[in-house]
Length: 89
Image (cartoon, rainbow, N blue to C red; front, side):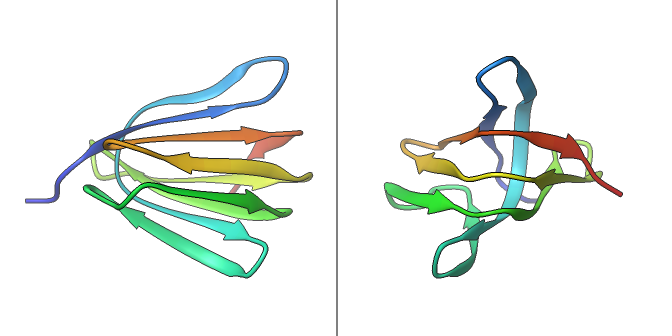
């Protein structure tokens, strides 16, 4: 059974997603990064690309980041701040 952690995806205008996830893959400056539960504290700059997460129901959600952003992971919580984002296929 996978472990879950909380995640928030935000833009300056709204919260795009708020919930629990088992895994996150996001486009960082140095390449895609994967985050699981109990990850060490981490912060990175995000670049445009596809953000994928698996929510607590097991569904895979995809978002497309069109601008830059920031990912912070601390104490089983991930927060993603993006210039702009849209739900993807």
